[in-house]
Image (cartoon, rainbow over all chains, first blue to last red; front, side, top):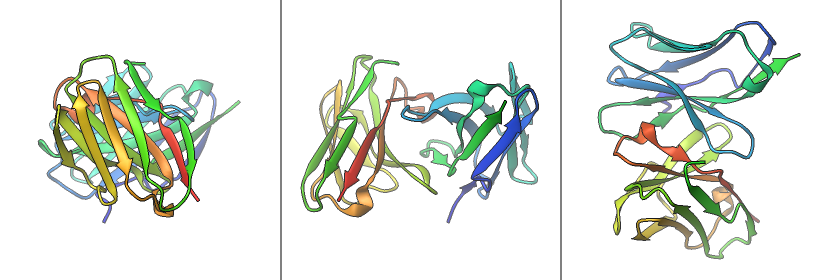
Length: 111
Length: 113
């Protein structure tokens, strides 16, 4: 029973356009959400996070939006660059519990 | 790379053999984690450690054991490897108990044939 769902295994976006990666969750008790980025043969690296008391967090080209009523969050990358091609994991935490990761979405930035 | 080294980086082993993966850190962080990453599953926590000789189970601990005899080393052992344990294994470290502040190693690709 997946608590954090990334329903798109892959996504292709033209360079310079906006990339939108989506994530849905089932547990309304999650209070902190994160996005990680992973390149091949490397470990995941933390990208951006958002607390459940906020609905938006922005860091440079990356913005995460949280819609608690829909139990949905999204990561926007604007403008998309070739180096953004990677696998992106959505993750969520409830209190002191361990992180729950989604399956990941592979983003391809097309030239 | 936050001072984490995983060894080996790649290993092929036969079903039924014991395998030990090593995670070594130079950051003196208290918390260490072992995850596995599989297609269609994302990352799942196997075991974690909150200090020397202090370990606990994660989501997918069956078939795995760990040991932490020194702050800098966290060993993951597959007592009798099975094909279902073919995966990429990631170690992570964090200074606090905030798992979201952890840094990941580069991973170990294990193939059990």
